[in-house]
Length: 199
Image 1 (cartoon, rainbow, N blue to C red):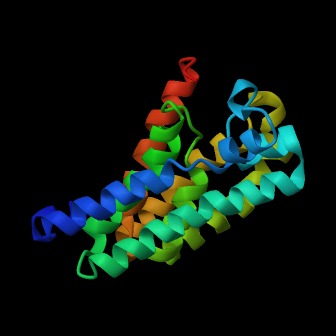
Image 2: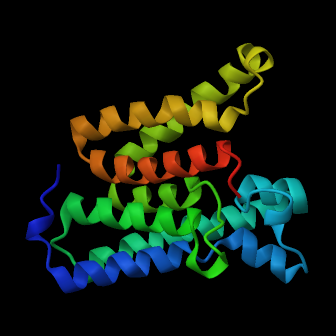
């Protein structure tokens, strides 16, 4: 486990809180409210839910916004605590994903966390991100062609269940294990909450 005691307390707390607040700016909620609705009444406020409810362009826009906040959170952390290393990356990644899943500005009812996780990993550990994306590129079409009709499970959760262990293995070998684990753990909590009927 990364050593958090080497991190300067005040800047570390600041960037962690900023990451959570950035995560709490859920693009799907902001977009849908600008359109006179709240997407959470019908769907999750991520890119795929926005795509289903408002069309492809809206879905791409919302995905980009949510990825961007992960990037900004990670860049802020790097700028304000340059010596932070993997310990800081894990804190900030977990915080920005937690903000997206449980946004303080929107009653703690957010999305699943994939997009801000991707944004944070792009800055902190691009090799792990590449492993995730390559795994998804192989698994999604294979799953849709073979198992989806029998399992009746959406491709995204199935692919996530396969890609995250691959990413963790790559991270353990090359660096970047802890940021993915932190973000993935928050996403797992959110997924369990949603499966139990949470909003």
